Amino acid sequence: MTGAGVLGFLVILAVAAPFISPHDPGSIDIRARLMPPVWMDGGSWSHLFGTDNVGRDVLTRIIYGARVSLFIGISTILIGGLSGSLLGMVAGYFRGRTETIIMRLVDIQMAFPSILLAVAIMALVGPSMMNVIFVLSLSTWAPFCRVARGQTLHVCSQEYITAAEALGLKDFAILLRHVIPNILSPLIVVASFALATNIINEASLSFLGVGVPPSTPTWGGMLGEGRNYLRIAWWVSTLPGIALMMCVYSVNMLGDWLRDFYDPRLID
Image 1 (cartoon, rainbow, N blue to C red):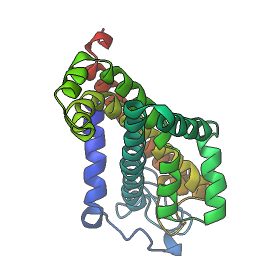
Image 2: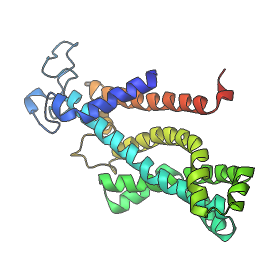
Image 3: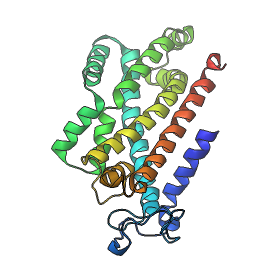
């Protein structure tokens, strides 16, 4: 519940960012550069979390950064997760050459470290939010495919599938009515952990300067911009880092709960 509450709070912040943000995320004020947070000497209530090296409000950029991280994370799960799950289900149900081809593609995909592959592709195609979504989706589909294929093999070995085939149900009807509902729960758990991984990967790409363009506020980009000011303005990097940690930790807690919920044997 704590994880769901924190994640829900971040989602509300992200959706309501244009209405609750105290400043424009791209507004520059050199006169107020590196202003400390309000609880430190020299802080101001007009900039609760202080400002960065060019006078932009840190709190505002953290709020807008939540929009980018959550949007990219959820988009990659929808694209990569759905495509991987469908391919895995097809491989596990139809078997034969179709399964061989799909699973060899999965093996090739998983042979490459995901973050290195993402950095290499982003270096070629250039920084863009859509490119980040495409690259992270490319590294997300394979785990979903393996889980979906394994679960489909298990479901198809059950007697009710044999009975459905004996009654003359078409393959599409069997997949829709019997296979998908029975493989959905483990895929939801995989999706929760993949969401946390992709949020971190997006932050990593932005930190390295090959993710979302610098003009768009992101948690990883703020970490990268503030690393040169850690000794004199720790809040520029530390506060977005705390927001990133809270988001990923809440998603992981929610994923742990989902795993226990769908498998009561794991509950202590």
